[in-house]
Image (cartoon, rainbow, N blue to C red; front, side):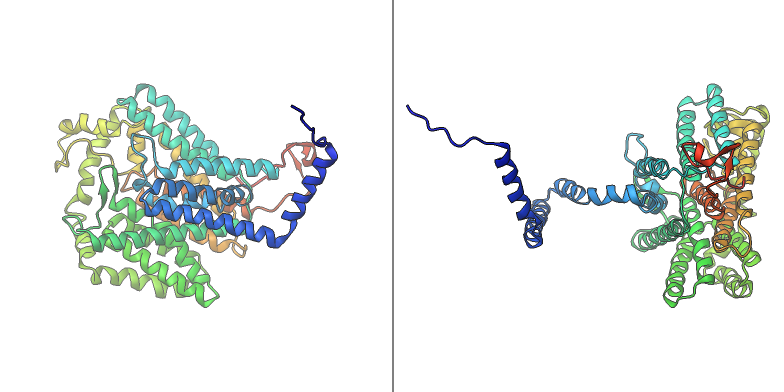
Length: 488
């Protein structure tokens, strides 16, 4: 059989074929047709998957579709995504559990956000020198880890150390990653948005499902997926503080209307929670804003009447406030009596991280409090929980960290372009301090979000170094990473 060999496939022929293909796809009309066709096929596939009830396939396809955009955002605007998504999900954290003790979806997104911000800081070569509060936070985690060696419950100790360590790592990253004022204002806007979304969901849930026996919001979806009413209300305090300050400083009508709607939703959500500690947090917010704002007369006219009228409009609030003394704050004083006795047994080193609940149970019968509030009760007080868990040494480190965070707020002077953010974050910080005396929230993300945002305010408020600025006796040009010195 004779085989006729075709023309040899030379490099020149290959180049000509590639040129023809390039010419075809260089035409915009051709590219538009190809792109439209591919998009139509992709959308049709998703529709078919949804129609067949295969939501897993539909979700995978949607994830593939948006993945390039999300990756680009993570590289170029990490504060918008994934950190912005992390901020928005914080009030829903307890509803986003992955099961099996694997944490929450919020935690996974937080890890992704921290990695994206580290890469962003390294790429921009503008790593900021962290404040002293970071050192106090790291020492606190280290001391927690040490006390876990003698903890009553090693599993609880490990869980507590792991949770706190992840929050402190996020604090370190956000205290060191560079950002501009626009980024910070975007983050504060997302904090308000997160509160509005959570408040709207809570209000809807309250009207669709029966409340608790005392008429409070009961966010209990399923086993392991619930939000305590106090935690829910406390997570709305920072959004409320920022929204009130934004309203006082708004110059456009649409911003005024948006903030009024946000404050109304946040206020109603806190009211239906009937959380006394959150209401005290609202009082702290009003006090700080009135004292710090130049528009204190407007703030007085808006906030003080509201705080006075609400207990009369909602009788349940007045009843809970009236019964606070007779019930010992829902039994808190009895719990605190037992925990104080437990702390006195190990005053310096504590019982070990995560041991407060077990310490309470072991000392309940020894003390015999005025009322019996059951076994295995947490302290409902951050300073007392810290004393029982990690002793006086741990409390000193926690207090030092909070004092150093407050000092960061004081670096923003009146008249600075971000002074309004200082007012809002100071009010939020004061509210966090107040509620910490009535609930154990040292390992709650909404608390650390306030601390992290204050650290970011410090970065924005500091002046940029000049090219010839000297850091640690070396010119900035001589070190591989530019360090931006900041007030401690």
